[in-house]
Image (cartoon, rainbow, N blue to C red):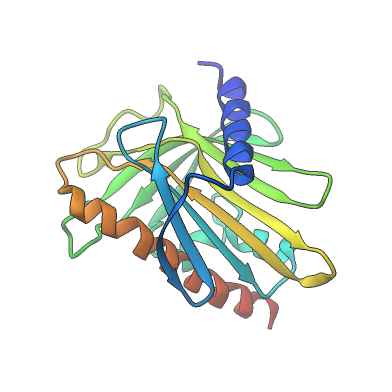
Length: 210
């Protein structure tokens, strides 16, 4: 499998999502975080977009978000139980396994996801993580976990012009949880968990910078 090509394609799609203003429907807003969605063109599910301001510089926000083994993400993100580096493809592209705990009062059982992750930086100072599902010989399905599939997803840490101590965080989730889940559970899970994601990130950044 051409992991580099898959990573580049995911980054292109994420950039496209970040620029598209129309077609989104608001599904939740809380504490300055707006969550919208639209039908996914990748699978029979939804593409969710979160948008909020974090009171910290992009490099500090990125330190908490950085997808790396032993990083801060597993300490504050309630939806990430473990994060494992499977293979380093290049300086900015890796293959990773993410384990998520049970959720929605255990209606959603533990999942694992195998993704290629591409860290890309833009000239305006924006730092992004771009990911999509891949197959890897070292990561067959494992007992105790439902194998889920992330379609192009990730985060954009965008500098706020004239506000060096603020970051606009755009996040995109496009996840096929697999298994036999009621659609109502899936539809309510993502907006709620994304707002929790922002709330927990804000607390983690504040601890990092205090």
